[in-house]
Length: 343
Ligand code: NAP
Ligand code: GDD
Image (cartoon, rainbow, N blue to C red):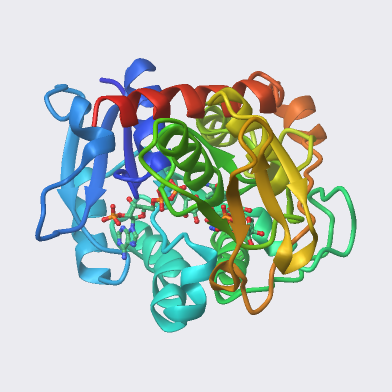
């Protein structure tokens, strides 16, 4: 019998890649989904006929459903990826974000205990570089102090601490992966990278006039999601339960990402002006293609994320630079150029 893995958040970017990865490793994957009025599960549609892939209903806001799932499936590994994952949206729905991203983690842990599998089940918690927030050290590692800077980050901080608490109080094998931003052609369309690659594809094919962005000076350590899900698995195969920073160790600005994405779409941008008046101009035509909008500024913004993946490299043997920043941008733009062309 192969191992059984339960993935919450299976319909998300990471859930879909992790499902593929675990199926390839021989696991039976149980993906937890929520009921929705449209059955639109684009990222996992290709897996639904795979005999190793099973869907179960549950919601991180509903303890009963989690207990039922844990009791019926009795997974060897749980990957808790489900979350209200958009930082800007967390300012609009802070209570919901806290319920799912903070209390939801507690519900998962209690469900594992109630199902009687706490002594053998390994649990991965999708923690985040947003915990470093208003950063107190650059680059950030496992010992860098946290300073969460959004309702999302504050909720995720609870998730991080309750995982640590259950590890120490009940000797459970539960760990947090402190993942820095990771992107892909499956990234949600309102996160900045995908918003840019889709806009570059649409603008270059005459389907959109302009791209409006917020803070272009913001710095991120962007990796490829497909590489990062391997690390989630490695963390649960480790001899002892520990937390790990997962990052590339390379940092770029939103402006740099935009310049490179447009370059791959065949447009060379030149930046003019500063602050709210900054504009990205097409060098060939003089047309303004990128402008700044206050709508995409946050009440508090995290502007300097840069991870130090030394521990994951050393102790898990993980390669943080498998896909370079340049390759990542190209993968996303190539995908979106085709998507727009075939739309
Ligand atoms: P995502 O694409 O936004 O996916 C989020 C998933 O959570 C979706 O499957 C969503 O289901 C599910 N979900 C939301 N609320 C739920 C609830 N109440 N009950 C059950 N499921 C619920 O996120 P992602 O980029 O794959 O990220 C995965 C996890 O890693 C998240 O916890 C995120 O906070 C964390 N993280 C992400 C990054 C990154 O750069 N991607 C970095 C650090 C940490 P629906 O499809 O039904 O909405
Ligand atoms: N979304 C968005 N849209 N962000 C913009 C825009 C815009 O138009 N313009 C500038 N930005 C800036 C944001 O202010 C932020 O500083 C940065 O781009 C990245 O924003 P997002 O792509 O929305 O990601 P995030 O870093 O806030 O959050 C993501 O990464 C976290 C890990 O650090 C999410 O995946 C979180 O779930 C994850 O925890």
